[in-house]
Length: 357
Image (tube, rainbow, N blue to C red; front, side, top):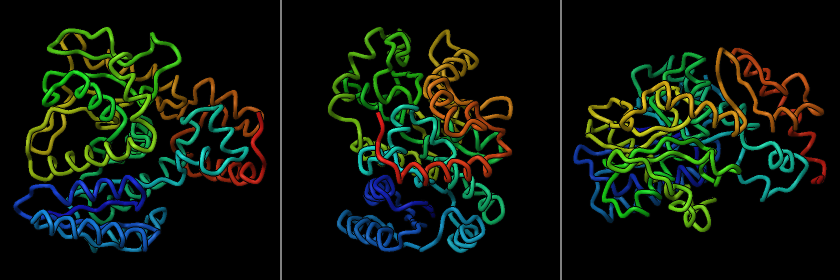
């Protein structure tokens, strides 16, 4: 069984460390495809050593490649011949406002994460294009803002199984808070917006236990949102990603929660069986109601893909209006390359300016 992981950051590392201990008797070969060859090689080495310590037949290697170059990525994927691909690299770090203060980081803080959609989608789109040409039978999982990027991928005819993280993180936190051994009795509907407490408590994620609606979701998530979030979320997401990838590879059954299922906005409870992902909604909630809730939350989070367009929410539109008015309301999904170039030019200009209030 073969996997390709695009990226060499903290999520790629957490995923590989989790995969290194996965019990896959048939064996596992993982190749990291990244622009930082040294980082990827370091991850591959440590993961390989861990696999040896655990007695797992897993092998990890690294290949230097520019993941924004669909042609180069396609060649690497053709050589690796993976059964599945995980994208966990983007061209915009979520940590930049804290790590590299500038007017750009200030804009991200004011507008919200939805503004970064073009950058979160750039490598995922390149990977989808590369897979279409070089490895069309492989499955694609996207870990970069999947609540919004996966609908964009679907609108661009890029098949995507699902994402990881986001709802997976706070569903796992709810599982822990409720003392549940697994998520079979738990059903959560929520969005990237809910990784943090929403400004309006009425916009909180929805959760059901044994079919009964929980009315204290915010309280149950309070500890995680206070002490367990931030960069530590990648440690959780890496394990979630490894479990999803191994479940898809082996055909096992798992009740869990995933964002961006088949290009839907937001996150949902699902059952994975024989490599297929199906919604596992609570009693009285149909697909339309669940999707509509996530569409509403997507607008609050800053980016909704619908009707062939990326539509920015009010906070993003207001922040962009004086800086990039042509894109303040969004852009057509067929114009994502042009939009990305315009956002890159704005980012470079603002990175050279100090933070403004």
